[in-house]
Image (cartoon, rainbow, N blue to C red; front, side):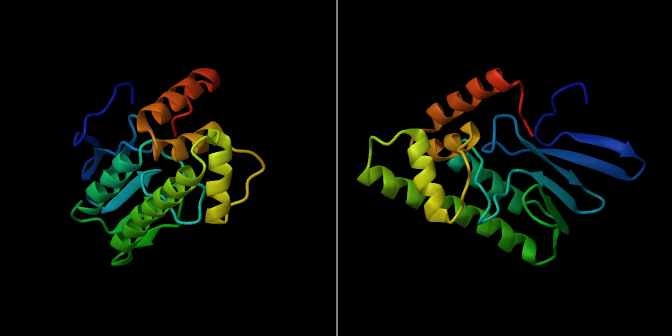
Length: 173
C-alpha cells in the first residue's frame, strides 16, 4: 500500500477476496486491524493484548475501546493476533474479554503502585508492575514504559512513543 487507509475502507485482493481496514488506536497511533470478509479472518495485529505477555500499548482506554470494537465485528470466525495462536469459534469473544481484563488488571496495579510511591521513575514503576504481573525482563524498553505511563497520563505516554520512534526510526508494527 502506498497510502493510508480509512476506517472501514476495503481493498479488493482478487475476485471474491475483500479486506476491510479497521482503525484500532491504543497500541500505537494509526494502528489498524484487517478483516478478510469472505473468510471471516480478523488480523488484529497488536490490538488484543494477551494476559501474561509483556503489555505494549500507549492508551489503555483507546486499546479497550478498540478491542470492544473488534468484538462487535460480525462474521469473525478466526482471530489472528500478534500475541496468541489463532483462535476460532466461540472462544473469540472470550479472548477479547480476557485482553480487556488484562488492561483493567494492569490499570489496578499501576494505580496501586503510583498511589503508594507517586515519585517513582517510569522505569521503576514499569519494573514493579511487571514484577506484579509475574514478568521478568532484563531491561524495560521505552514502549513498555509508555504502556504503564499511559495508565497515568496517556498524553505523556504518546509523547514518549513519538520521541522513541524519532530515535529508532518508525517502529510501528
